[in-house]
Length: 246
Image (cartoon, rainbow, N blue to C red; front, side, top):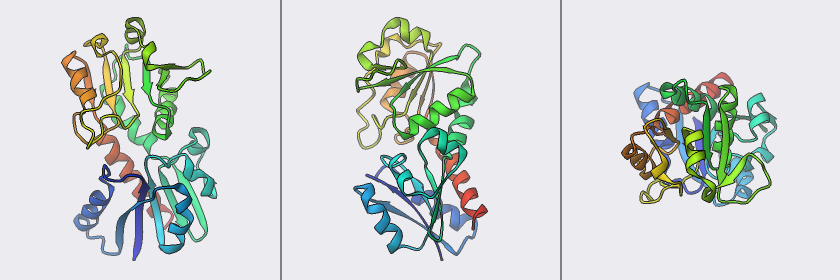
C-alpha cells in the first residue's frame, strides 16, 4: 500500500485528503491512501517519517519553507523560491518540488489584461514566494505588503497603501490566511474603497469560495478569482511527480 499525506497546522482548512481519496476511488486506484498529518512543529517531521511508510507528501502552512532543512534534494524552482509544497520520498531521500508555481500561473493568467503590469502581493510566506516567482516570469512588477517592518525597498506596510499606490498596482494577490474558513469574517487590511473596476483581485484561499476580500473587491467592480483552480492543478501536478518517481 502506498501512503501519501499532507503536513501543516492546522489542517481544518485542507481539502487534500478528501480530494485524493475521491480521486483514488474515481480512478480505481486501489493501492494508495492519503492522510492528513497535523504536526504542531516542524521538529515532529523526522518522527513522522520514521513512523510511516510514506511515498510522498504535500506541504502547507506554515511549513513550506521550514521543511527544506530536512530534504536531500531541491528542484531548480525550489532553489530559487525557497519554499516547497511537494515532497517525494524514496528510501532515505527526500526530493522537494513546488507545484504551487504551475498551479498559480495557469489559474492566475486566465483573467490577466494588458494593463495588469503591476501587482500588490499580500504576505511574504511560502505561498507568496511561489507567486513572486511566477510574477517575475510573467514580467509583472510587484510590491510586497506585510504587517512587519522591513528595510526591504520592495516591501511596505498595510498602512502605507495610498490611493496612488492602489491605482499604480491594479493586481492584488492575497497570499495570507486572512479570511480562511472558519475565520470567514476576516480580511486583509487594505483600503477597499480605492479598488476600481480596473483591478484584478486573486485570493489563494479557496474556502470559503468567496472570501470577504473577494466580496469587497467585487462590490467595487473588480475582477475576482479564488484559489480553487490553483489547488486542483497543483494537486494533480503533485500526483504526476509522485508517480514519475515511483
